[in-house]
Image (cartoon, rainbow, N blue to C red):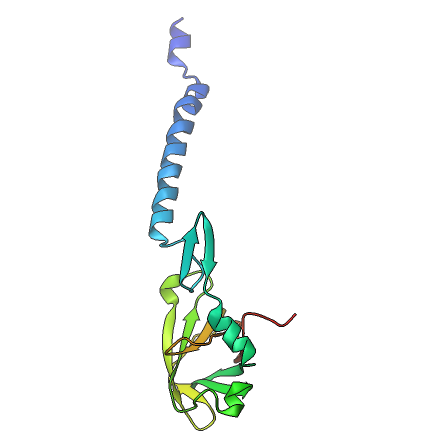
Length: 169
């Protein structure tokens, strides 16, 4: 009996250790989720009604009807936005006003940025050293947000196409 009292039962460590470990892991997950910020990966203003998320598609529809399209070029000099056609060519979109480009990191909102593109000889330009080690989600709009173009700059590439989010069927 003296010998049995001295040996410890390893199952008892499991009975105590597993619940304590699960509590510590749960608290860690809560801390990580609270520090990560909001749950939306969408940069649009959205409304939630009866657990349905909706967004305003008017700017996308206008960009589609105006047949807007642009190419963004990135290099050491900065960002250059070149209009491709549609209302850019007809003069319906003024070329002498700045545009706003929102650059969103696909997974880390702390890296998101908004850039004002100034009119230039060929289109619009911004002096910005943009890191190309990851993808960027792009959204281009004028100050009045009448229309909106979207695109994706793939990591390591120096150019991206921006077009309406809605497509003709």
